[in-house]
Structures are given as structure tokens and as C-alpha cells.
Image (cartoon, rainbow, N blue to C red; front, side):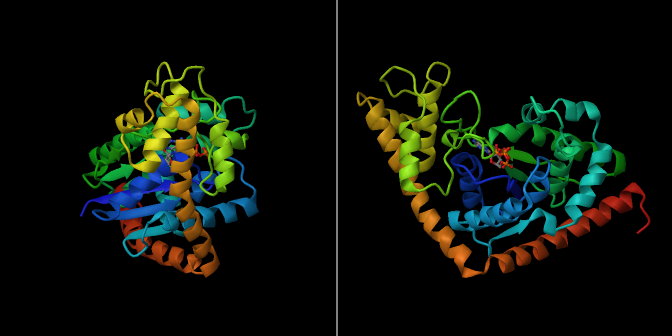
Length: 326
Ligand code: AQP
């Protein structure tokens, strides 16, 4: 069975972008693959996190995985920091990564832009992501479009290690959906919807109440036209809302276009809001049940225990090949 691994940072409340770009694919893949779905808390601390918020967000991301339909009997669901092999393998991968490779990462450029003090972890964290993926000899990594470059680095590092120390790693492939791979902000269709945005109106949180969702979508920026047409170059905001609609309802972009032909933006936005509410309401209900059940920590501990078996074995083999005395 092919292996799948992915993770989301607990750096805020998950957004609809995280769901459409990542989680809904996780749910699909668990039926046909051996899956590892992490909450990447070691990645989250590459930007400043309040300790209490980090603890809460880590539980919240894990509970949203489960509420969205990830079955912990099928997939390993765990916190990255609970499997220490990630950090150790991450360090070894950092030593094999070139400065120039990290300097080219657009996510680093985006996240460090305009900031005066930038933690060095933000610069080197792609090497930790390499370790996360290679630790399980992952075949497939379901991610949004923004992570493509990190996946290319992972492929290069797998090949570099294999050439230098003998074949060990599978060279992984990204798994990126055509529709919804990059959901944009509601207030600015040139930047991606992000959970750490300072403006809550720019994103839909997976835990936003239905009325908040309706309000955010009705206020989302649009052009002055009327036609509901998928044309990202000329109608980026409407195209983004169409991707959201398609990502939540399962309709294709053509079906969305046909449904709202001649209807105007008002009716379309109402339809988008209802598609989002219909998707998120049952997820939210399950989420609160899971949080109240008190079972989350035990599920995460079990996931980490299972994952550590494979990650520890890989780490041992890597250290052996690199010349460490075991
Ligand atoms: N807007 C998006 N559209 C589609 N996919 C997205 N992803 C994130 N935003 C969108 C995908 O979600 C997964 C987890 O991302 P992450 O939390 O590890 O990091 P990120 O890409 O930096 O996500 P955010 O929401 O923008 O977080 P912050 O604000 O903390 O930086 C990835 O597969 C990502 O592609």
C-alpha cells in the first residue's frame, strides 16, 4: 500500500483554504493508502506563538481532522512533537541542504517580508519538512499549491541522500488538486487565504458560526460586473468564490457557472454562503462532540506510538549510513 503523509500548522484556527486545499484530500486518501496526518507544531513555532494558544490550536487542528472524517483507525493522527525522530532527522537533513536552496523558497520570502526579527527556524524549516516526509518513505504528499516548492526540495534531498549514502529513500510525489489548490483571501484575491492573517474578514475559519460565514461572504470583495464566470486573470474574486463553491459542494466549475447563469453576484454569494455552511455545520457539531469526549489525547498518543515505530527505524538507518556510532 502506498504511503501518504501531510500536516497542518497549529498557528491559528484552520481556514476553509486548509480544508479545501488539504483536509478533504486527506479524507479521500485514507481509504486507499497508509496515511500519516500530523499536526505540525514544530513548524508552527517558526513564527511566534503564545504558549496557551499553541496548546489549544494543536488540539483544535487534531479534532478538526477527526471531525472532517479522518478515521484514527485507518490513519495515524498525531502531533509532530510527540515523535522526536522528526526533529533529529530534521537536523540531519538541514546539514544536507544548501543555503541557496533555502534562499529560493518563496514561502520564506512571503512570511519574512516586512518583519525586522525573523527566527532562523523559519529559514531552515523546509529541511524539517523534508525529514517529516522521508521518515516514512512517503510516496504521496497531499498539499496546497503553496507547498509545491518544498516538495521539490524534498525530492532533491531524497536523491542527494540516496546518491551519497546508498539507496534508501522513496522520492515522493506531490498530490495537488486542480480545483481549490489555492483559495485566496476574501478581501484580496492576490494573496492566499491564511489562518494567521491579522484580518479575520479575509478568511473563513472552519469554526465560524453560520451567520459569521454569511456575513463574511456577502462582504467579500468582487468586481463591478454581473457574470459568474471562471476567469482568474480578469475576475479573480469571483473565480475564487467559484472555487470555494466547487470545493464545498462537489460541483464542477462548469456546473457552478451554469447554475448561476444570468443570476448576478447577489444570488451567487448567497449560494456560496449556503454551500460553505452546509459543509461546515456538521463538521462543527462533530468537532464539539470530540472536544467534549475527552478522548483526543489518547487518540493522539496512540497515533504517535504507531508512527514512531517507522520514524525511529528510518532515523536509525540514516544515522548508520551517515557514520554515527549506534
Ligand atoms: N489558501 C489555501 N488554499 C489551499 N490550500 C491551502 N493550504 C493552506 N492555505 C491554503 C494548505 O493547507 C495545508 C496546511 O498548511 P499549513 O498550515 O501547514 O501552512 P500554510 O500553507 O502556511 O497555511 P496558512 O493557513 O497560510 O498558515 P499560516 O497563516 O500559519 O502560514 C498545506 O497543504 C497548504 O498547502
